[in-house]
Length: 96
View 1 (tube, rainbow, N blue to C red):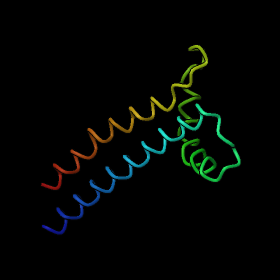
View 2 (view 1 turned 180 degrees about the vertical axis):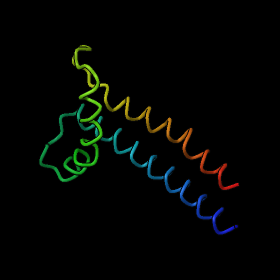
View 3 (view 1 turned 90 degrees about the horizontal axis):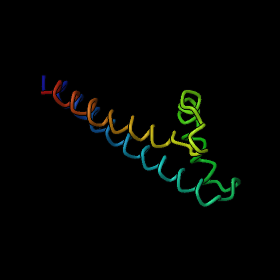
View 4 (view 1 turned 30 degrees about the vertical axis):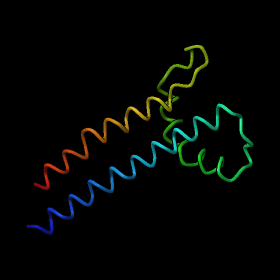
């Protein structure tokens, strides 16, 4: 029984860590888009490759008529915060 508890707790902590790292990657991408960085920079390429699949899906759903401001990073960060507030504690409670 304690093996299942430890496994579920480890999965919850890993999910929390991955979501936190991904949130910082999204913030980095937003900052890079504000300063108009070199698109051929390897770091910029990694940021765009890591975030564009999810941000592109959100952009298809959100209207872009809000003054030309891209709200997709903020929406994705809110989704990540929801998952951290719901999924991680739920897994932790299941482990108990």
